[in-house]
Figure 1 (spheres, rainbow, N blue to C red):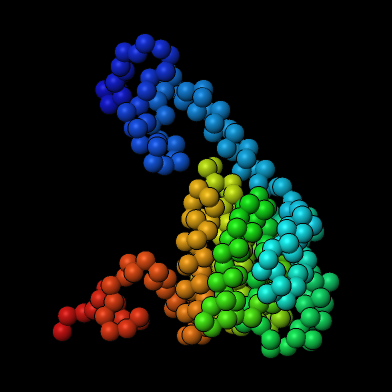
Figure 2 (figure 1 turned 90 degrees about the horizontal axis):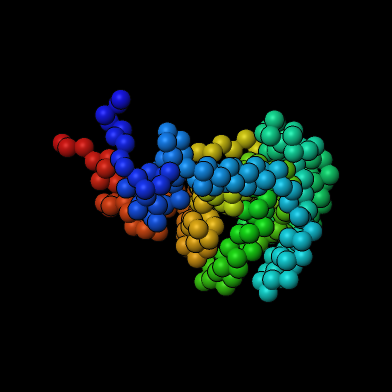
Length: 284
C-alpha cells in the first residue's frame, strides 16, 4: 500500500480532508475527502450540476427583446444615442462555436444599419458600447444593467463628459466585433461587454474590453480587459472604477492595450512618470 495516502479510521463511509476548512475562502474544489478511493457522491453531483450550468450558459440564447426593454427603462438611457439590435455573420450556435472568425464580423444588414446611423451623426461620439452575448448570455442578462447603472452616469456627468453612441446589442458575437462597430460609427473608443467562457463555478462571468481608435484587424495587444464582473467576482462598483480610469486615460493619452496600465490599485511602483518603472531599471 502507498504510505503517502494513509487510510484513517472513520465513523462513516466518507473520509474527510483537513483542507476542507479552506473551502470557505474559494470556489475551487479542494479538500473534498473521499469515499473509498472515489470522490464522495455529494461533491460528484455538485460537479455535474456545475458542468450542466456551464453548458446551459454556452447554449442559452440571449433574450434581446427583454434586454432592450430593460435598457430603455433606465433613467440614464436618454444620455445614449439610442439602441440598435445587431447580429454577427454567424448563422446559429453550432456555427458560432465552430467558426469564431464569423463572430468577429457584422452581417450585411447590421453594417447597413450602422452606416445609416453614421452618415447622420458623423464624428459625434466619444464612445460606442457593444453588449455582446459571447459564450454566456446569462452573464449579459445578469450583469449588464447593474454595471451600466454605475458606469454611464459616471461618464456623462463627470468633469469631462463622454458622448455615447447608440447602445448596440449584438447576437452571436465575439470580442473583435466591437472593432467593426466602433469603426463604422466613427467612435473614438469602443467598450465591449461580453459573456465570458463559463467556468465550473462561474457561468455568469462578464468581461469588458476597451479599445481606443477601433478598426478592423485590431489585435488583442491593443485592448484592455477587465474580467470576472459578477456578484461573486469583481463587484460592479470596482469594475466601474477601473473602467472609468482606463477610459479617461485612453482618451487623454490616445492609446489602449499593453501601453495603457490599470493603476487604480497603485500596485506598480513607478519612478518619474507612468511609463517608467523601477522594474526596468538597470544598474550603471
